[in-house]
Image 1: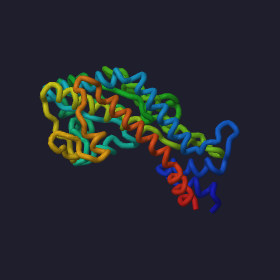
Image 2: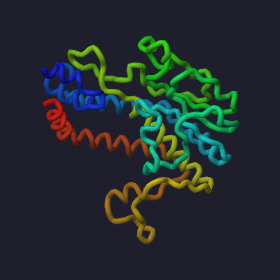
Image 3: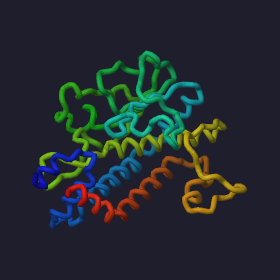
Image 4: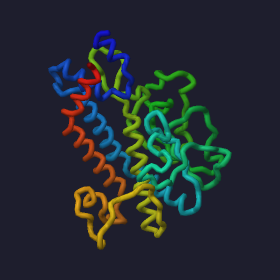
Length: 281
């Protein structure tokens, strides 16, 4: 099997590695960067667009979540995290404050509940009939995203008409953003990156708001311990285990930390490239 056919047989989960290999083999006069680096740059650009244009909607969503928790309501999540709604919220997942229930069960929903909705698998009744507040967003899995003509008729579902807040992620029904030389189909999905970032930004500010109002939230997992109310003397504790201004948006701080880590990945691209070489061979 030659490299072209071999590349077609590798799952999309290996997209970043494939793109970096292809980027070394095919050099463009317009952009000589490996495709893997171009991919992460595009992802970062989409995330920055969300931060610049949707921060207010994300923060307003966090206030609605906190209010729902304070009032004893339920927070349901049908938020796309990359092909699944529970990809990053498995049981006892460290860092999860446990504010959301994965999946939406209309029979159990009641007035005062809240629903995050960007993944819909079948036509659904308007949640407002149950008194549920709805926050929606674009994802590749519905007719609410650009290019719905690419979807099967069963997937051309709409839900924006019953959303109280709408968050535009910039994703499309293609779900991928990288044009690969010689390929007719794009690679490099982004729905997971966009969904996870927005979900955890909402969680971060909801927990901050609850803490500000005197409501403790039990975040799962562990953290570096403080010694005599001072930072533990190693770098990660100094950065992560420090006091915050409880009146300032925390979701934006989370965003900046995540972007910093993306830049760290770029700095390690030599290692990524070697792994891509091994995968291709």
